[in-house]
Image (cartoon, rainbow, N blue to C red; front, side, top):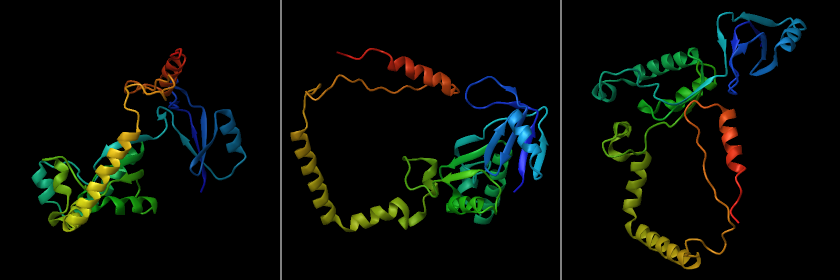
Length: 237
C-alpha cells in the first residue's frame, strides 16, 4: 500500500490546541508516521507516495458516533420501519449509510440495535473490506426494552431467542429458581451481618472519591486541568 502525503490545509489535532496550518502529514498504512517538515522530508525518500493537496480543507482525527441506527434510514413512521421493511432493503440502506458516515469523517461508531440482526454481518463485511465504512460496534437485536419502548418492536416475536428465550427456560425450572433465589437471599443476609453498618466505618482512611465531568465539547487539556486542581486539594485529616 502506498504512503499518503497530505499537504497544506488546516490541522485540528484533537488536543484542544488552536487550529494551525498543516504543512505536511505522512500516513503509512494505518499510522501517521510524520508531521510537518519531517513528513515532507520523509516523502522525498520514497517512491510510493500519493500526494493530496488539502488546501482549503481541514485535517483532523476521525469522529466517533456513539449512538446511531444505520438500518433505520429516515422512515416516516414506526409502522413503516417495523412492518413494511424487507431484510434486503434494510441491508442495502445500511451499506449506503455506513459509507455516508465515512465520508462525513466518522471513523468509528456504535449501532445500538438494528433491524433483522443485520449489525453483526455488516460489521464483519466492513472488517473484511467488502463494504466501505468506519469501524463498527453493534448491539445486534435488542434483548429487552422499557415498557412501550420503540426497541420493543425489534425483539423477535414468540420469545424464541435473546432475553425472552432465557426467561422461558427459567420459568420451566420454577423449583430450581426458587431455591437459587432463597440461597441468594441467605448469602446476602450473611454478608450484611459481617459488613460494618456504621455510616463511617472504622476502616475509613479519610479518602474522598469523586468524579469530574467537563461540559460537552470541552478539550482534554481543560478536563486534565480541572482534575489536577481537584487533586491538589488537601485531604481530610
